[in-house]
Amino acid sequence: MTLAFFSTWIIESLTGIFLIDLAITFFGSADPFSLATASQLVTISSIVAVFSGSIIGLLSIRFSHKKLLLIGVLCITSGTFGCFLAPNFLFMQIFYPIEGIGTVIVGAMTFTLVGEFLELKKRPRATGWIIAGGPLAGLAASLVISLFFADTGNWRSFLLWFALPISLLAFVFAYLGVPSYLSKPQVLANRKSYSSSFKQVFLKKSPFGCLVGTLVRQAGFMWGIVFSVAFFRQVFSLSLAQGALIALGSTALFALGSIVGGQLVDKIGRKRLLVATLLVSSPSLILIAFVPTLSIALVLSFLGVFIYSMGFPGSTNLTLEQVPEARGTMMSINGIFITLGGGVGAVLGGITLVLFGYTGVILTFASLSLLAAAIFFFLTDDPCVK
Image (cartoon, rainbow, N blue to C red):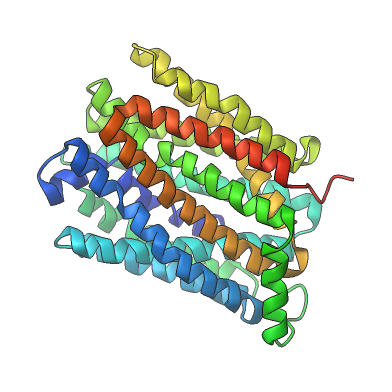
């Protein structure tokens, strides 16, 4: 399941490390408008994922979560291959969202399966390692880019020789490694069971608070996914290879932070850990906008990434335990809100980049993190804290 989650992050390099090169490929320029337009692939993917996530939320009540996981990995494979073949930006707008659909499915079913197969005390550590699979994918992608594709900026070769094989391996490992049985027998789903599952997710304050908080938090997370490498490359005049090395360091710290956070969940609490990491990491992002030297900006960026990432296991486990009897639906809807958050973040980032430059982008994303902290603090409850 870690490898499946690993595969969902690789194509993010297109709208991260390769954002400038992607804009040049399809628009012949790396001006702010072209960069903002290229970054909207994330927004389009988010819109499509909303509809697919709703369907998965329904299907998860009735069908095998392992089968849905495998379908998600196949979507990632087909979307990646389609992006590799895309002759123009229109085709990118078609195939990039297919990969996004797979990401929503894999994310939802991975953590649902954790809830089914592992006892409560083991879930935080497991989710910490699985979440670490995402930044580890970014780490591997950054390393591969810096070694083999930095001089050419050839994002198509990156997809063909790295992203596509990883997604195929993820399918094989998920097929062979994930048990096919369920910890509890599935009941025959009917209209009442569908309605009950969605009501528990949307009509209770704490589960709905988790969803809204997740959306806002993910919107803030788009700074690191889409804009941070471009910021360092353009503001400090760095090459693609240097940008890849920055991404390499960030993703290594993100993976480490996720693992450390998984160890701290039971000691600190799901909600407390999440809120604390959001509050502590935001000031370091704000300071980056006003620091004139590369070294200090990098230290602040890396520190913020590490602290921010420690909150991910807390967020996932807080959401996972909200509606135990409808985990598949809860995590599917949560996947929708994660994807929506990514789209909102990409839109806000693109608009503020054009209107106010990178200072406006940084302040916008820091504000989103602080808003997410307030939402989780006031609107959610940790069901595992008596």
